[in-house]
Image (cartoon, rainbow over all chains, first blue to last red; front, top):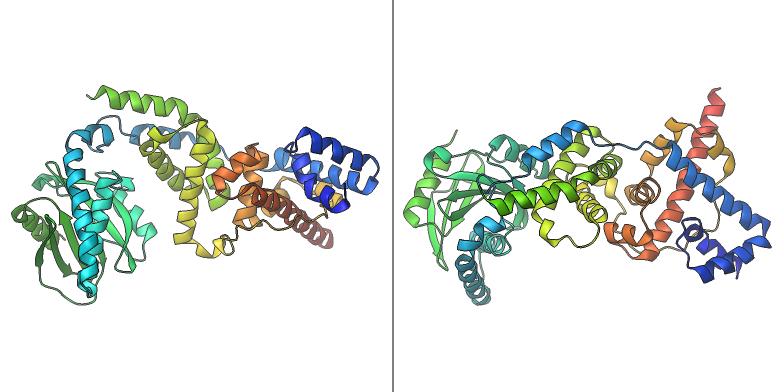
Length: 249
Length: 177
């Protein structure tokens, strides 16, 4: 065994990661080489020093308690795959068809900025419902969702619960739309998921309504933020929700 | 009440929550702050619950991979500077020079913790997973999403950098004595 090879294998040897044959070879090399033996000894000392003297940070008891409380046991409040399976299947099949249609449509037109955002928001909505990954933070509490999003974005999106109006906040996620990070708030109206995409917007924009591939899309801007609502919810109710959001404090 | 769900939650608590200390230790060493580590672990565990059905094999490396990814995303947003050079996945040649003994024998708990915390994140995480969690190279490779050769070179480089930094701390304290 060459000196180079021995040096290369020394860490794996000390870590007990060398196979038997290589270990024997290395040990033979060490036996006839005091400098290598000393190097090996120093590595063992270093490993022992970290194991015995570096801090091991055990989880605080309060964290375990908080986690037990926040991992959802019941479908209410934080729907999971099991609970949603029943209605998600037709929705997913529909979304798959929509995604295909969207995929072919994008080839035939050169979208402007607005159009691009609408398309990417729609794609994000379809991906999330198809992949069953609706949110990164599951919570019906706006005071949980808002800091979670603010910590990940360069802006702080307005977050409010409208469950008294029949639009229940499920959680939020972060996505990338129109070339920048956006906040996505996820609401539910009966069995319909509504994604609300929020990002900073410079100009004021009147409320707009669009229909794409069977999905309804509402957009408006207020307070320096642009909003895009995407859902398979009927147009009338989505419009109501857009007005609620626009009027929120 | 949905029985399938509460049973799922129970299985999750039995298999995953025993590894909460390992999860917190890794997050604490990567974020270097109790409060941030709690936030990241909480988010990672909720994420783990969503992916729980995909768990095959051992729960600890599986959970640590999720925690580690959550830490990286958190650092990317909050302290991107700390991840400079992190994407460098290539296995470097392993240096032969091993650490000096002197500084190692003299270093106390505080000096060692300081030196470890000062390492760049990719070396710090490799050393924490290896020495404090006693994980195999294979598990570390899976958790940190790099080839085995990179795990080996990061451990070797990390140990040398740690020794250098201990030597520097020890020299400085000699001067002040």
